[in-house]
Length: 147
Image 1 (cartoon, rainbow, N blue to C red):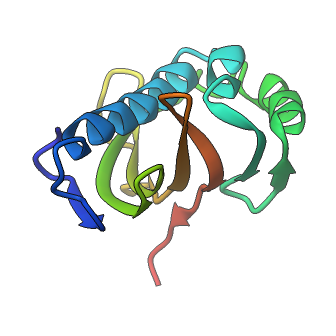
Image 2: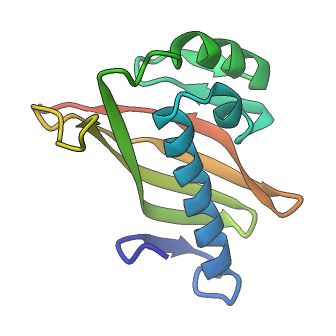
């Protein structure tokens, strides 16, 4: 488990929480890998069939088919100038099989240097465990701006 990850929710310190958090962190790592390597099918496979995804620019996508169409259109070529890292920073277990996962998304150049201006994203992933697998269910990708 990432030592910086905060955990809240009923049963958060139960015997199965560590395995759940590790599985959730693996899904977030798979999001990073799929986006970094521009793998739209791998990205889409992380979602429930009826998932909701709101992009960083506010576009609402409903269902895996719509998420797939959008991802196949925008992901190829999206990482030619920069990449991003994803870090799970907070997990709230709403129920044992539903978690709200706060992620810190940092943009970097292809050689790993932070992007000028310190651009970050602050995604929220609501995830559900189905048949032993954590899936993205309702997600909001938000860009952090200075006010």
